Image (cartoon, rainbow, N blue to C red; front, side, top):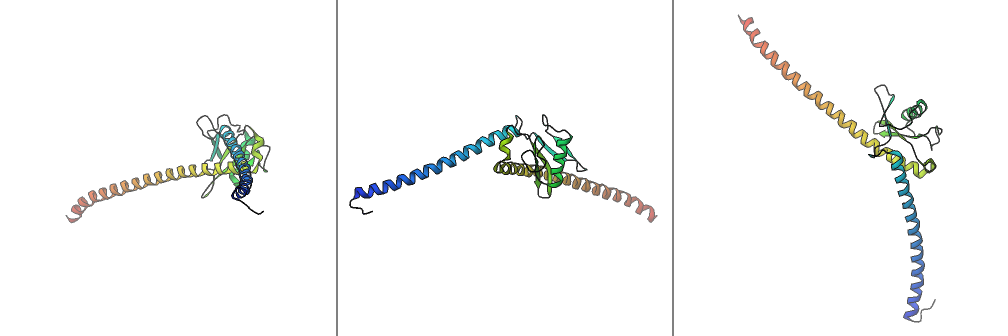
Length: 196
């Protein structure tokens, strides 16, 4: 294209600019649609996986023998079959249940809560719209949510252990001080008796 005048240049730039603007608008619309879909999913996820206070409907933590015990599971279907799926997740460290390739007959999705030392528990999620949970992006988002939950639980467990260690150290200091005091109190009279 040969530009003969400033107006021809403006028209050429304008048409290319319109094309670029149109491409940008199309890309922006697809990003907006994707973000809107993600927001809709997150809202449904929040409503499906939390109670009115925003707590997960079922967090299952192992007892001293490695068996899961439910906490915050009111209204969550924890029959023996569902507990079996959750126990499998704890033992294998992989997601199972609804929307996964493992034990898909369960009525909920169970995700491992992975801490730095391994699986510390299981999160059970009961969806309202199960069809959306089978999408890989949805499962990755759920796994990210479970990882953040695991970090929070692990931090709480570590704080509890640190408090217990601090309490034990205080008890040990008290015991040492008491033994030192008693031994000094006994040593003085015994020294006088032995010297006589």
